[in-house]
Every structure is written in structure tokens, then in C-alpha cells.
Image (cartoon, rainbow, N blue to C red; front, top):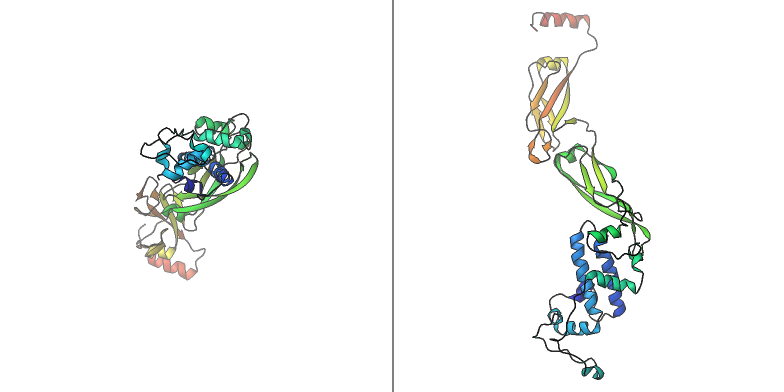
Length: 330
């Protein structure tokens, strides 16, 4: 049979006119391209199919041919016999399937004709004097043809671990859109954002026209701006990670092995250094943040040492230090 128009409209094969109209109204409003600026191509294809299904099933003649022989018969395929007469009075006036001409109407025409029986077209999307279209011109009219407001920006807080490994965030938003009668209503929506490894603070993720839909204006874009949360251990410098290790004067002079837990949970040992001088820094290659354009590459991990000097020394301690260090060259 080809396309199952009943399944397209989600109605039974015994559906009456009221059932067809209710189903078409619900699906046409759901899939009209003007109401789906993000997935426009998918919506346009479904909108055309829904309109075609309604256009066939609402017409008794077309529906009879479709029920008997399927979609191909509507296209005038000569292999199908003519449909039987619906009543004795109509038997003499019917034509066979080869003379039947199926006029596949434009989906927007079906849409406009349907609503002309219920509403003025200007109320369908809250416009005046224009019919919503499926192309750029139609989208401009649907949005009122007005100037597009500046984008609405919101912070997207991310931990350093999320920016290191990547993550998926779900942001729940509320916005105002027109209903099928053009009246404003508040809808809630969950937006999914895939955080890619290596993204930096200030990275922007744009959702086109997801702001409030004000009359006479195009809805503004909604932009999420990555904001990096402070980390208790690491600090980011570009693609490098910096960690400050505090050591005592004794440890600075005698050496110590330091242990770090990386952002992806690994244990990293930093071998002791014989003498740690003030301002000393150890650089560990490829243990920093991933490069956003090539996550297989990473920056460096920089370990900076802060030597904690004693606040005071006793006389004996000073004597011992003088005895031990007195002959040591600086």
C-alpha cells in the first residue's frame, strides 16, 4: 500500500471526519516548520506527509480509492480497476481509476484551507494578513517580521573535572511561545549540552531562537556561557594545570616524594628533589588539560613549591643549624 495515511494521522481505519480533523489539527500544529526552527527540515517533511494524509482521507472519493487499492491508485496507475459505486445513484457518473486525477496539493494550502473553516489565518500564529509558509519568508512572517532581539546569555557552571573529561548537562528552561490561537503560553523544555574535553571558560553554546517569543519580533537566541568553578587543588592556565605544593624547610632541604590525584582519578607520584629552592617548579608533560580541538593532546602539569619557613627558632636549633650548614656552599 505504500504510505499508511491512517498511521500517519494516528487514527483508526474507521475514523470519521471529526476524528480526522482533530488528528490533523494536532499534528499540523506540532510539525509546522514555523514552529520548529531548530529541526526545520525534519518538521517540514512530516508536515507535508501529515497534510497529504489528511487531504486524501477527508475526501470520500480519494479515501475510497486509497482504501481499495492504496497510494499508487491515487496517482493514476493503470493496473488498478475502477472503484465500485458508492450508491446506485452514483454508479452511472463514476469514472475509472485511469481517468481519476489526484492533485497532490501544497501542504500549506491544505493547512490554510483547514484553518479557514475554524480561525482566520492571522490567528493561527498571531499574525495579521499573512499565511505561515515553510520557507524563510514564511518563518519571517511567523516571527512577526520584526527585528531580532539580542541573544539572552546565561552562565553554565562547570567543574574542572567536567571540562577535563567531558560531560552532558541538562538545562531546564521556561519560555513564552504562542499557542495555536496566537495567545502567549509558558512552556518548559530540557536542553541537552555536551561539554567537550578541553573547553575553556567563555565557550558559548547557542540554541537558535529559544528565547521568549514576543509579538512582532523574532525569538532571541539562547546562549549558555561556560563558567569554570574554582578547584581546591588545581588551577588552570590555558591548557596547563598548576598545583602548589607546600613543603617545610626540612622537606625542602632533604627531599620528599609528593602524591597527586589527577582530574581523572589517577595517582601521580612526583619524585623527591634533593634541594627545593624558593620558586622551584617541576613540569610534567602531557598531564594538563586536553586541547579542545584535539583531545589526544594535553598541556603540562606544573608543580610549584611553596617553602614554609619556621616562624622562630630556639637557641639550640640555631646552633645546630649553624653547625650543620655553616660550611655548606650556597
